[in-house]
Length: 357
Ligand code: F6P
Image (cartoon, rainbow, N blue to C red; front, side, top):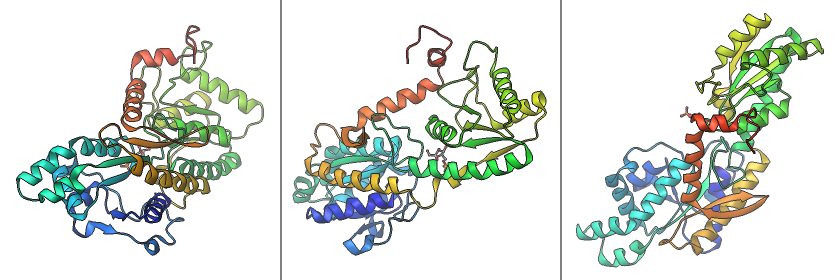
């Protein structure tokens, strides 16, 4: 996030624009005053290695309603702001696009009430350009290969899993570890591959994985047993927080522990990694990603046509891309809804020979 703020502000300065930082997310736009701060080159020094975001972030209820957005519009027009670059997930990006779509009506209302002058309404208030950058550890946005924060989070998860494996190996224990990701199994799957886990539960793919077993309990235990017989001293099972079972019910780590203990008699522990996955020093890749995408966002603002569509800056095949923001948000929501739908689960089931991935 900080690398992104730095790149956006410095590239804006380099393009002779005046950058402002909005503190505490949309709440800062609604509140105005000292929550919207003009930033200079020096203000951004040294923030790149810091985790989290130095400008703050918040879920903002008022911005979800028109009066909140009206207040934001007034604050922006008064400061001469006519472009907004937002870093966030689908909720934040949708909010930005709603503001863009309503902008003309909001400015008109403010002009009627005499809160902005005619000159302001037709000058800075004439149009609002929006560009979205995707910041999410979940890597759950459609139309981009990777989101800002996901790589750092994956590193953090792998470090934690490696530490857990030390105990598992020494004591010949089983560990069931819950990782974040909401409805997206990217973090869980990548971590499972990267640390050589024995099993992974994903939201997108309810077990069992093959038709040889009636249920996930039998399949997982058969595999753990086989691994043990082959000399594997540990059992590591990763559960994505949005994982589901074959009846499409949430699958919780405690249930997995219960099954392993009952069927295999293994000493089993549950670990929830929690918010250590969301903080700390960003990885080199995330700093790079945020920097190149932040720079591209400034160019996109200068090219954007506010009457058509807002762009979202993404990444595809290692190239920075610009895609229609709302199309990406819509596709993301469709996929997330599918995860809990029966037909999706059936389609994802590899036992269905007709199903093509
Ligand atoms: O979307 C990012 C994420 O970290 C999810 O993986 C997780 O479910 C959620 O946010 C946690 O949110 P909070 O910090 O509000 O508990």
